[in-house]
Length: 435
Image (cartoon, rainbow, N blue to C red; front, side, top):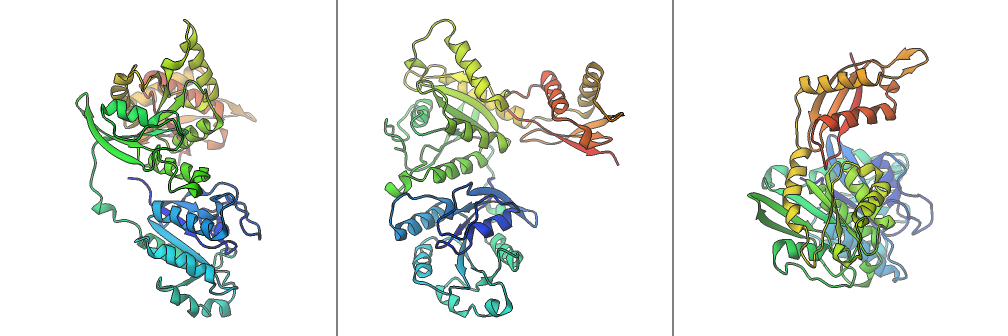
């Protein structure tokens, strides 16, 4: 199940980005005492008391030249659409404002838990003088100081209380996969061709699909759930300019998937946005298949497919494990291979290997290429064991984790891949000192 999403909402300059950074434990958003300055990454993973969740800093969602009120409304609606819990930030220094009340009116429609954070309550007097904020109608306000961290723990306690009950979530045994990519690479056409029906709107206008759609189907004796994330633009012009909102939707779909199909457009080649989208899937540890669509539109010779594959490998070096398939949603070329490929990648993503066999592979690898030494001290590898799946994760016990150079770690990973079929899935190696 995907991590819950927490959106931080409020008028400009109330400290949304500072709170975002405080919870994330890192300066992810740019912070400056000027309204509308947030321009950097606006989404991140966070954890509080063992609860993982994803955060959106809506202050970083750019709405172009739209009026101020429209910007606030658009940002709040992003939260309403995507969040499980909304943190509504106001300022103790400035008190209750008309803009705060306008944001509150939008959030009333959300039917989502709203936690009210009164930021910039840096001293006792400010923390006690918060009674005006009760009029917003969101229950007890939580006085906090994002800069100093005061009260943030109590705020997060209230946030996780609003998370969906995991026990009530229906267990789904189907293989979940999503199609990720820039607008107009043909995701919707792929969906329709695979299902044999017009499931979603298809147009050559980028951003035609308005909502992410989950579709169940059966192929080759296996049940699949397909999430089409072509709906990365929504509700008119304010969303047409909101690229980061589209990325957030893609990330949510990635979180909910076992396997991600990174869809490229053969006619347009590889763009920077393709690399970003694929990078999110890789960082999330999902199984990945690279799907090159519109292959029928290219003029080809005997070397075209080899040259294109080599170019993909060069541009996506970190996805060396991902299989590549060249398809055409228009003609149906090679689409029949996708279900079996998705199933195999999903199985590899959840594969376990015996510790004894794994250690035989590791020791043979060390005999082939001895461990490095640093300042006369040699790295010693004692034992390895698999501790998780989805993706396969291995702990390697060594004498000193600091001596494990990334190049030798990559060598061990390649040896593991050479002996076990982990095609389509990243694998993680974690070094631990033997106690």
